[in-house]
Image 1 (tube, one colour):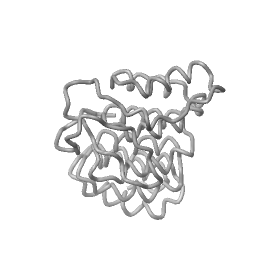
Image 2 (cartoon, helix red, strand yellow):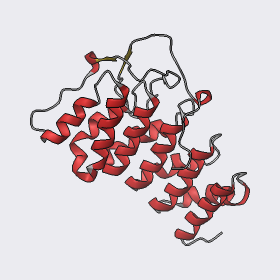
Image 3 (cartoon, one colour):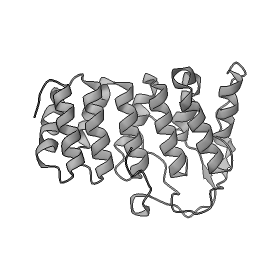
Length: 220
């Protein structure tokens, strides 16, 4: 994903020094960001910790535990390792969904990327919630757009089409690419892709939209 670096202007923050990992409701709002902090250690309120079943494979359980570390670097590491398991990481999906509401933007972004790598359909609605939260940080939103393309979920088509006019170029580009990957129910997305291919101010997005149209058999 090109240039995926955080910018403070695309985040929300709160003054409280103590944060909780909030369970993400279906199509609910994503919790606020703490992406401006230079200190990677953020206390996570373990009252919200989901119980880790004893039946989880040891490798998955160990990395799920990292998602609840007080150190954001460890939480990012846990999400990354779970994503590296691919579809074998499916038992970790509920925990990665919870981590989409982590107070640290890097954890949220890595969790979205991990969900895309695992490609379990149960992540579709929470990822759509992240994508369509226009007040959220763009890194996680672009990662959610990319992940939805990997899931190939038809229910993601309309939300992805709706962000082709997003303020952030990374979000628009990932949405355009993902629409070409899904290739289902595209009647609702074709017009938006054609508009992006013609008139987006970013050449990379015009190219991505045109390429998606080509993949869908509708060359621009």
